[in-house]
Length: 408
Image (cartoon, rainbow, N blue to C red; front, top):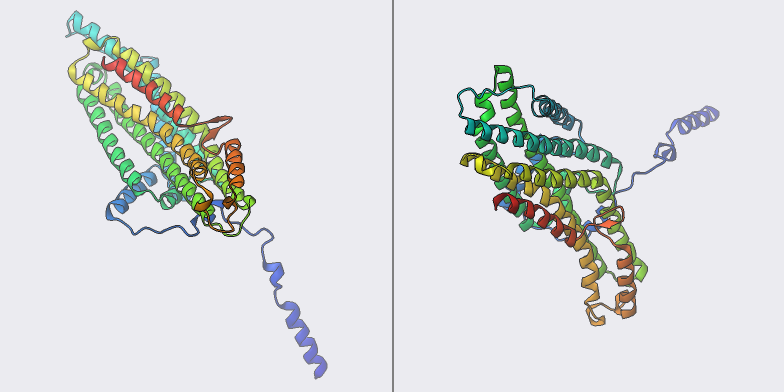
């Protein structure tokens, strides 16, 4: 009996799962930015801020860019189909000029004005349609690739939570709604005043043209959402920069290496996020940056021949596009300014501003850290170029010059 009991016990022991074997070989690590949440002050929710975030959530979800869940592929595929339609329309209507206009009932002067208006609109629309289509397709690709970069703060579902700046959030919301209304007004005026809809021959071409006007609004509105997704990532990185400064200030009995590790964690998150966005950012900047001035130059050459309502439509349209061009530049510069602000804030302190045991109690360590930070050049960097306030101002004056050329 005793031998049987011993054998039975051995079988039970041998059949029990080994805890070590059940554990995964690679334990998933948390992203670096999770460290910055330690000690962060949690703000009480505000109704206006919660409403703005809910609106952004619905809008970002509608374009399939809220997170990486499977259902997001549905709107992405639908919008990719819309992009394909817009490219086909630009080739069929703008480039190949397959749809003809009937000028039989117009005077010679009106015919010249209409021909010039349609010609310039075709060129401008083709350029700007290319900008909106490429912006969505490339951003979606970058968004999916960024899933592999654990340190990148790209997801709106994450960046809206990490962002701790309510005033900027409400400001972005106001600009988002205002730009959407301007864009809708511009497209509405285009539909009501379009010469092509009135004069185009054949119902097929008329249907194609009406659908293209609606798609044009949709794609630029999608580009508006994409720019605000990037804006929320920049706000989250700004919050991380403030957290990094707070962690450095609260450091107790540490060394200079501990301070540098905190700063290196911040740089890792910033560089990973910038790397995830880099292809889209460069393409968006060049396509809208080139499309807007060229469109303005073509349209402005015969502005006196264009009816008043058409001028209003063009003006509203260009203001919206100028905002789409400028917003990513301002956000990228803001990321760099927040990172540089850490160095400036520390450099302006004295030994009396630090607790006993803090490495910056010794002024020599501050000088070493400032020297290191300048060499590190933490910020929104693409290649060897760091996007700062100077480049943002260049973008602003570049777009403003084009607008002034149009109005004056």
